[in-house]
Image: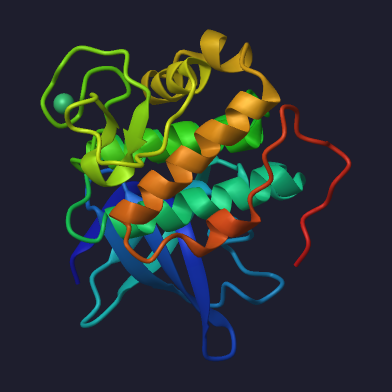
Length: 252
Ligand SMILES: [Zn+2]
């Protein structure tokens, strides 16, 4: 049986039979992998918690007829418990893996893998507010998938900005000529924050006000939902706070 090895981040798992799980992973080289982890739900499983969501592992698999089978898993990034320890981080991480799962259906890329691992690592370290980490991740993941928004020049005709009308269906800000009647307007601070989230300019992001973050979040959510059509279920539960509380526990 052909055996292969890769690094992968666990997106989700579901139960299979009494003791096994199907693990959906985004891997560095092989794109998305669905594989069976045998005995993983037993207390004394040799996999421990290494195949739980948000964990990054060096995995060895053999190719099965329908599903591959995980034979080894060594932890590279044990982010799961650290993330689950904070509710805001936990909900943000759920939205991130759900987006990654959907965005890599057609094609996976190394960049998507690295972006997701970087985002989960950042959440586990509480580097920035969880909602901000998620919004930055979503804008960049959508960009990698070919849906890069513009928050500077008109996304339709390219007229240099700044512009204040934002139409997610058109790809971001639009100039006065391109703006449909009644197009929503956004203040310049919000536009600047959106640009900073997209480029990873964390100095600008951290300097933003709570009100600006909330407005930018509305644009990111609308933009994400437009491109992912059905919208991400987990986005509805994300809390947006400047500083995550460390005393909150994940529920369920
Ligand atoms: Zn225009």
